[in-house]
Structures are given as C-alpha cells and as structure tokens.
Image (cartoon, rainbow, N blue to C red; front, side):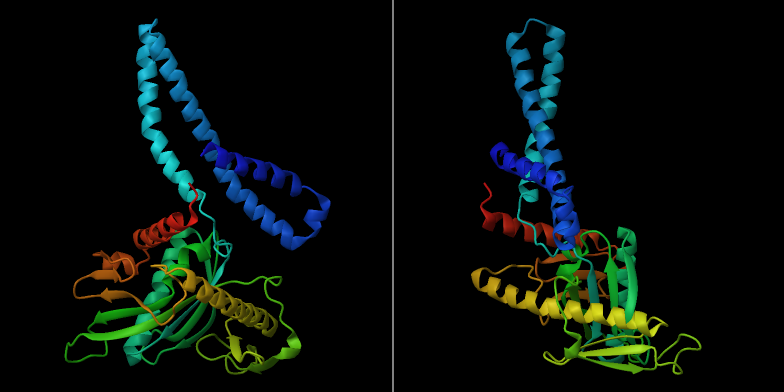
Length: 357
C-alpha cells in the first residue's frame, strides 16, 4: 500500500508546484482541474501520514515489548500496540476506497429535473413531495438550491420543476437518484380510500462549464414570453421568460424564475448546456455498460429505482434491495442512510473492477 501511496505523494508534490505557476493560473480550465485534483490528493496524503505513523508505532511498540527492560514502558507499549492494530485495518479500508478512480463529474453542481409521470394529479403532488424532500436534504448538506423553471399541477405539486443545486460533490451524491420513483398511497384526490400507484421521473444532470460544452448561438433559437404563475406585477405583462431551442438536437430549455430577461437567458443556457453534456455522458455510459453492469447505474431514466409505500411507512430501493421504515423522516430530507448505502455498493463494485491491490 505504501508504494501506491508514494505515487500519490509524488503527484501531490508535482501539483503543488504547478498551481502556483503563472501559465497554469492563466489557463482557467487547467487551473480548476488541478485545484480539484490537489484537494482530492491532499486527503489521501493526510491518510498516508497517518498510515506511516501507525506502522511506525507498531514497530516501536514491538521493539519496547521485545526489550522488556522497563515494565512501565512495556505496559504503555502494549496499549499503544493494541490501539494501532485496531486502527490499522480500518484505515486500510478507508485508503482503499479513496484510491478508487473518481468519476471526474462527481464534483460538479447539478440541474435536477422532476417530472410527474403516470397518475394524473396525484403524480404532480408526488413530484412536489420529491422536490421538497430534495431541497430539505440539500439544506442539511449546506448546499444551495434555486428554481430554474416550474409548471404547477392543477391540484398542487408540479407537472415539472427544474432546480439547480450548488455545493461540494453534489453530482457524486445525487446522481443515483436518477430514475423513476413510484408512490403507493391513497391520493388526496381519491374519495373511495383506495390505494393508487403513481410515479415521477427524476433526472440529475451534471452542470456543464463553458469549456465542457461549446454552444454556437447561431444554432440556438431564442423565444421570449410572459412568465406564468405567482410572482407579482411582472407576471403576464413583461416578456422576461426565455425559451432556448438547440436546432441541431431539438433540445429545449427555458427559464422564467428571474425577473430579468438577461438572467433568465443565462439560466436557460446553463440548462441547455447541461442537457447537451448529459447526452454525451449517456453515450459514454452506454459504451461502458457493454463492458460491465453496474447495480446502481445512474444512466437508465426509465428504470423504476424506488418505491414509497405510505401504508407501510416504507421506502424500498430496488437496486440494492434496501428498505427503510422511516417514510416521514425520509420525505423530510433524511436521505443520508439510503445515499450512503448506494455509494458504498457503487464503490465496492469499482473496487472489485479497479484491481487497485
């Protein structure tokens, strides 16, 4: 393991020198990438230092015990040896997972799109419930959320809502939420008390930087229209809402959340760029899927990934077979256990494939 960590240390020292070079600072794309790599490697270098210290403590303790001339020192050495031996296997597992090659997209911010599926008004209400669940989870992580566009349902919730999430390692955390979410409950709109099954689709798009996707504005049709829904004097009077159509692909993005036409256009462009970027990623994932089958792949939008059963107070993730019986807490943003398990399964699969050791 130390040999592997020595390569990490060498690369860390190399990047430490590079990020202070004027030509690197002037190249924004390279500078951002190197800074991200520096941060990731710094965590590994710190673990390396801890590993070296623990191995050194074990060697030192064994030498003192073998010498045996000072009873008090021997007793202290035995305690030190026990602590070090308990910590060492745990630390080795932590380092193994940290050495798994990271998806370069994981650090990106995201655009989350939630759309009501089958189930009419109840599907829209459920889409609204999912939106609130995710915003509460994002709040608990210290991430910022902002609505880009929405289309309200006739009986509450949303036919569609798009929102941006910014923070640390957002895509790497939320990407496994992409897919079809199914709810089983008695709808608010049901008078007979029968349980209905409805669905909503969640898409999680990594936010593309300008240097990730180049858009020729000659290929984009720009339409301005009046905002709809609540919002004050500018609604239905000022053409501040913006719709962008990418002619080569037919992709459409719009934003009506900001009062400024200019800000709406910038936001819509972010969505369009993310959708184009996600298209390319989907192609890459499809190619990767021919090489391996991931249990928690984030690529298949049509896959039913999770069921929310209100009668039993249960949430079941079908990919990993995990059920959690805390539906109220879950819908109030307590997704941590589920997401931790999904990441653990994904990392374990990567660990088997990567043949790091």
